[in-house]
Amino acid sequence: MTDAPAARPLLEVDGISVAFGAVQALQRVSMEVGRGEIVAIIGPNGAGKTSLINVVSGFYHPYEGRILFDGQNRTDFKPYDVAALGIARTFQNVALFKGMTVLDNIMTGRLLKMRGSFVLDALYVGPAKRQELAHRAFVEKIIDFLEIQAIRKTLAARLPYGLQKRVELARALAAEPDLLLLDEPMAGMNIEEKEDMCRFILDVHDEFGTTIALVEHDMSVVMDISDRVVVLDYGRKIAEGTPDEVRKDPAVIDAYLGVPHE
Amino acid sequence: MGILHAVLVAPFVDIASNPRFLAEVLIGGVAAGLMYSLVALGFVLIFKASGVFNFAQGVMVLFAALNLVGLIDLGVPVLAALVLTMAIMVALAFAIERVVLRPLVNQEHIILFMATIGLNFFLEGFGEMVWGANVKKLDVGIPDRSFLVSGIQMNQLELIAAVTAGILVAVLAVFFQRTRIGRALRAVADDHEAALSIGIPLKTIWVVVWSVAGLVAIVAGIMWGAKSGVQFSLSLIALKSLPVLILGGFTSIPGAIVGGLIIGVGEKIGEVYWGPLVGGAIENWFAYVVALAFLVFRPQGLFGERIIERV
Image (tube, rainbow over all chains, first blue to last red):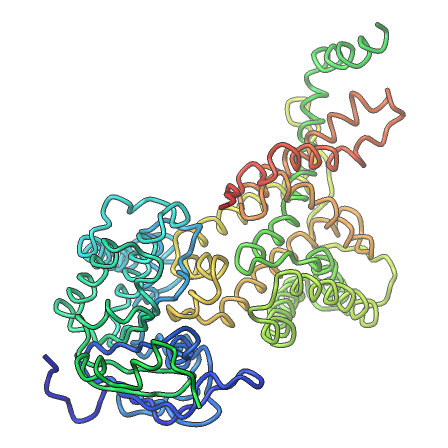
């Protein structure tokens, strides 16, 4: 299922370590995400999965190791620089703009693509109007794609959790990212919502060719949709491979069943 | 019975008997109200974009006025002094972002609030150090003249203040609702982390919003300074704009205007028609009583976002 790898992987994480005080969140973790791949990062609670996503998206900075995106060193980039590179993300506990409508939320995802002057924007004439309409058209496409037409004008705060997660995915997609980072996209969902989300992730991958790295706590959900799986435990990478390989790996089984560490 | 008549009937008889005088009182109230609105606007802008209640807004008004007066007294032409003051306020915005806000990013709002208290005292002391503590007369060429329109007395300064406030509000409303920067501002106000993740640079947004608040402070400073001289008590008008904020809602630009008008008109009418009953000075406490009532019955204000508590 994996596409033939291009000259270099899109994202290379090279031996990064992150610590919060005395707590080692990540210890010399290395991994790669190739163009067009869906890679899942799994592991038990506190394994460092979210930390890894936060490092890649520039919210944390590692004290050692490097992050390369498209072959360039991006280790010290700030979150908004990372976004400008074409990396979009969602958050574990949904970070929508709660006081804005669903449509406005998704439109903010296009901010980086917008250009123009205050005056023209304010008067809403000429290029400003054309630009707004063009972006709006793209956003409508995503809204159709994720089947959220009916809640377009609803305030984000009033949506049920599962839909909020879907809107957050829509906002990330609106940026037309090269790499999409999803932090527990299925957390707190019921079975039906989880299946929907799996389907959307696969559809996004097929339709837009987006490379996706997703973090998930629940192993079973991601096995069907990922090309490769990276397993973290206590801040270290303990396994990597196809879903089938990882499933049989004794270290992974130990980690999930809670065999005591030496 | 006598009391009831004096409170509930007599003032209305007064009002009905002299509509021309009522019109003058109303105009005075509207003018005063818009002046409160101008100060309240500065609060709303910063609160909207960073969720921070900027305790120093009143002092920013004073600081802007002090700089303007100081420069004019040094012999700088009015227009050049105005441009220089604008530059100073923008520079101040850059400095605040760098020194105060950036080190405190993602901290609790109460911590940022405390930082603005510090900013308040710094600006007050700094202004006094540079320009001295004397009351200064601000003359930017707007004559404080009165004239009659169909028998109703009007004040030119108040009229200009009203028109300026109106224009300012219209421009800001359009800026927030229609421009890309406006959408980014609303996004930042709502959720810092998410705003960063979609590529909005917080730094830039904060500098923009504090600059705009600084420019609004200049306008407020000019109007108040021209009316009552530039003195350190000018920073206390911030206290008067607090009830305006509570009335209008902390996040609403139109709310700041309507709130200001209600307070301005309300206190003038109260003072003129009901004041004699209690020996006057209604003007001093009217705003706070209204604010108190709002806090009890409608804490989000007239136009604020409704507070929904999830349990």
